[in-house]
Image (tube, rainbow, N blue to C red):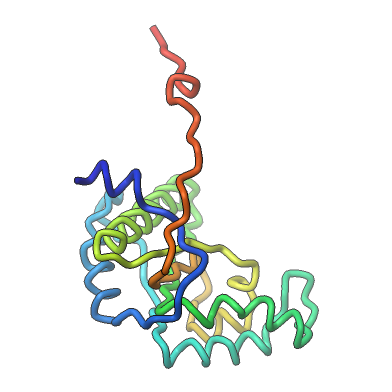
Length: 183
C-alpha cells in the first residue's frame, strides 16, 4: 500500500476550490510529525490557514515586496495570489536557522521528510498537496504577518486541496543510471 501511495502521489496545481477541513490538516500534521529528526529536536512549527485565513494572506501580500524590493502592482499581485483562490488550506512550515551548519542541515532535512510524510498522508485521505517556495515567503512584512521570528525561516508553503483531475505521472530515470557501486 505504501509503495502504491508513493508512486501514485502527485503535486496538485489545479485545485477545485472545495474546502479542506482544518481537522483533516491537523490530523495529517500530527501523523507526519513522526518523520525522522536528529535528537528528536522536531525542528518545525506551522501556520495553518483555512478559508478565513486566505483573504488575510492575500491582503498581507498587497503590502509585501518581491525580492527586488519593489512594491507589487495590482497585476503582479493578482498573478502571485491567484493560487490562493482554489486550494482548500495552506500550511506554512517554519524551521529554525541554526547558526551551526550541521544542525541547520539536519533540521532542513528533517522538515523535508516531514513535508513528504504530510503529502503522502494527505494523498491517502484523498487530499492533494503542492509544496511551493515562492520568493515572497522571505518578504519582511509577510514574515511579520505570520509572526516568523529572527532566526527562523519559512521553509515551505504546502497547499492542501481537492482536484477534479490527477496529473499523469512523469517518467523517472531508471535507478540503475543513478547508482554507482563502491567496492
